[in-house]
Length: 100
Image 1 (cartoon, rainbow, N blue to C red):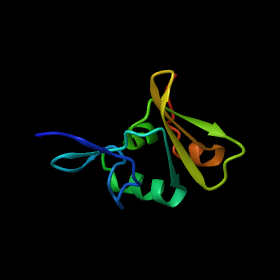
Image 2: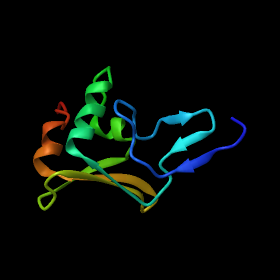
Image 3: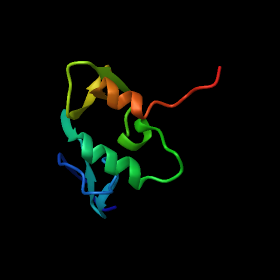
Image 4: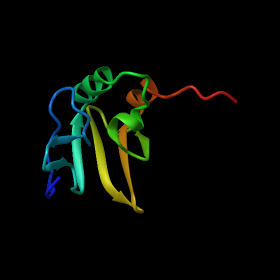
């Protein structure tokens, strides 16, 4: 890569929000991004290998919000970490069952 140009844009269908758009472009280096639930569903469906919602979105953790209805918010720098906030039911839909 000769140089990176950082963009703040919605991902294309089937493209992980944090993947490279092209040889010299890297997606998402901004404060907040909003994705519809349909966009996130498509991103999860496009990933193979049983990745977690956190891995698909490229975030440290996905937090639940009872006040969100139809969007997932991705925040770039919360205490130095990239996080997501999703509607509670949507987060539960993709929650990984952890063995005790």
